[in-house]
Image (cartoon, rainbow, N blue to C red; front, side, top):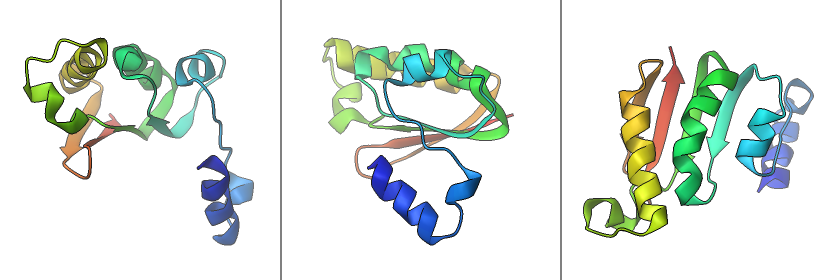
Length: 118
């Protein structure tokens, strides 16, 4: 997906203005200086809560933090106690309670959260 995205950015004449970083997001975030405009999160769901503060720290003001699967096929509304479901629930709670983000959850496919750093 990263190479496909890079190709679209190349075709738009923007590839020289950005850097696409792939890998484990927690490692990538902790090993970077930050100053990101966009962070896209789609790691193992039980680790989702750990990304909220890390993403906030590395985003520029006005930066966007996007996370996939926040509706988790509806499991977030059930009594499912699996680590993945618990992770998505806790992530969503932390994200919506975070004073530094303005967040919307879009019910597109499996749910996408879009947060802007204030």
